[in-house]
Length: 371
Image (cartoon, rainbow, N blue to C red; front, side):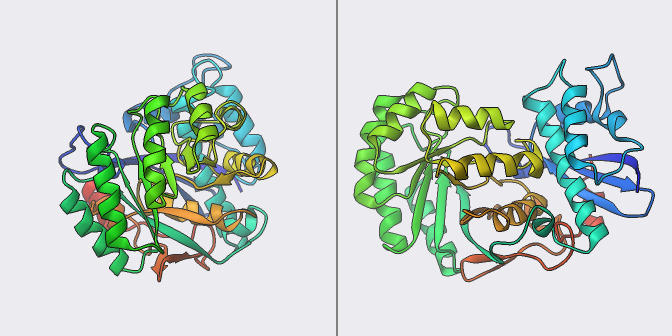
């Protein structure tokens, strides 16, 4: 089997509100074609125009080559070698950031091909299935008012979610608002539902420590990204002082970055995004590194059903996998790009029994939103 084409598909809604941290407004889909008629689907979580250039760029010299050129004619089953080839071929402008983001979507698509070619799920090909269903949390952007948030929480708990996260928006800008929001949300969802809060990089370590102590009263499961991504010393101080799990890592790419988050930032929960961190190949290495250090891993997945499917396969194949982010955005791309999305039922998503990622793209939705 040989790779014959690496197709990059930029999808976007007619109007994008850049004031919102909402990655479901557009996406970059990868479709890899082979000479045996099998194609694989992947998704990149990045700036679409930038990542597209990384894939389609013509070669400049031996360590500055576009990813498509590096892959044509290759065997998709050589997945570790191809990951290394892409990494070495983009050293001049890569090693992290958009180059790793672009590699991530390609890597996911390669695993989809391998699964389809063998008639097995991506989780099986990653090493085996530890569980056929995964607890999923409803992931929502925090609305402007606590009343709106309470209504959303009531809605999604009513749909069967046993965990819920609110993030960004007004969080982190007013301590009194934050405490009252958490108090109200806990009252609405009850004591048995996990509650997570994403602050969105707005605090310093001292404020984060102070606020985490206030949140302990409401049994917050984790506080996500309260500090800027590079404030490792601040994260270490917070994690060491707080009884609440501290989670971060969606901004990072490559396993060395996650090694630093464990060693220097003392994080409790790592959140690699499969569309950014290096794909399933690199995420597996990150997961086992965390497993050896007895750290939790919950992948970030605020995009379309492609990333949700890849993340489900990933968590199912981890010995310590226990939780999945499930965006409940009403964006058409999030809800309808995948024709047969991963099934959610009674608080859990179920591992598809179809080969590869187990999903199909709706061609009408793709055509309608193709930029």
